[in-house]
Image (cartoon, rainbow, N blue to C red; front, side, top):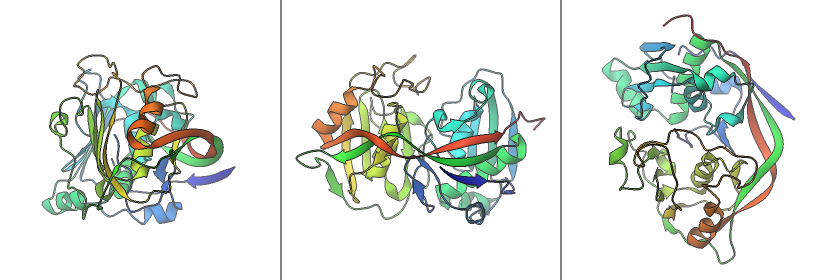
Length: 314
């Protein structure tokens, strides 16, 4: 077992859903790789206005956490901010996460105020934004984490017999400045429950009908599939290094509340395709994209919580 220690990075200060590839190397399940010193050296600027406090209003905030002037995890379980800071999709990637982190709502907000810092934030690679979020969590919640690499069951995303059926496209020249703040505007009806920009690695929108991806790499697709919580991490073993446009159709998925709103919870289920909402993925991947998921084992990074506490005040 390999252990990487994320000691106190002394970052002055934060950032669904969901950004994947930035300038730092990525581990198969997401996450940021590199020594603590190498990671800390990427910190460019600090938030100028920070809020970290409980929120008991039950006025759940549905917008993107990454906004044009900073990071807004407003009235959400703290686990959302922690998952963003360490670039992981599922709370199950953490070991020792206290129950209150996923059940009690907080405001965790970091804003840029000066015009120059707002411009710098907009242009900042996502991995560096995550470091700022991590700093807020360390300073205000006492978060301490170390990473253990374990050999665990995975799904390998591979090319099916007959080859891929996706449209190859050129890589985008530059990353979009920001994700649309209105979730209703980032995709057509049935594809707009959630949206994310992966910068030079693509864009996607997904909803009750499926997912639409543009300029997406296979690492982005693997990360999206992992977020469906199939019971195992999904890792890209396709060997495909290009960018693709495609639509992966879904069987009907039933979320609580408005079907055009963000889902109310996270998929969960035992190992294997036991979640009754997602077995169609195994069939649709092969029929529509020429890809498939094969069970196996592989290195999986687990984020072990050494310490976290409720903030004493703002």
